[in-house]
Length: 251
Image: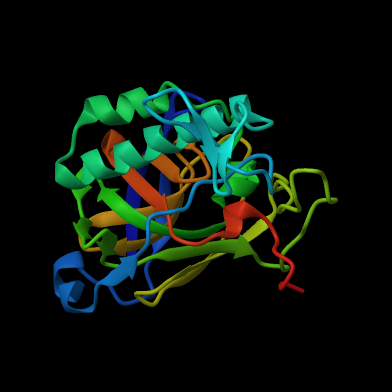
């Protein structure tokens, strides 16, 4: 079966039409509520690894994990920046699980600093849907996030790592036209191309909503926001630790 999808390219500010060939089983979120995936909220990504997190109590005294200390820790300014970015994204997740609020999304989108998000390494990894086409599909349960499915985005030719720096070892950014494989826990597998123009690349239909990459209006270690057909909002939460870089146990 083929369906015609009209989408919006937020980078080029134009519409486009694509034909999507459907060959996989269509599943409505409501039909898989009995097999929800439980996801932990992402941990904070400290830009400078290995330093001790510091804090000050109500009396103005400084502490870290070892106890009292004489003043703030080294790189405390960087710690504050990391904490502020983390709180902003986690608050957006929690707010969006309560109800869809376009103001929350717009406030996040205004802070986007990544010019070519579809080529950025941060799209790689596993993602859990919080909003689909502006509809809430996730909820909080005992501190974890319950979602109907997850998707995994990876290079078709295998992981490609950058050179080691003081900040760690991370995936390389993508090249425009590079092949990406997208896997879903609900069964579909699709191959698409990374696109510097951030155009929507259709993946599959679940219920009445399109799953796609591209159309990205905000991307961070913790969140991805997309605008799809008819400008509906998809909000995704990071569901793995790939954003933290390669660890010593990986080959």
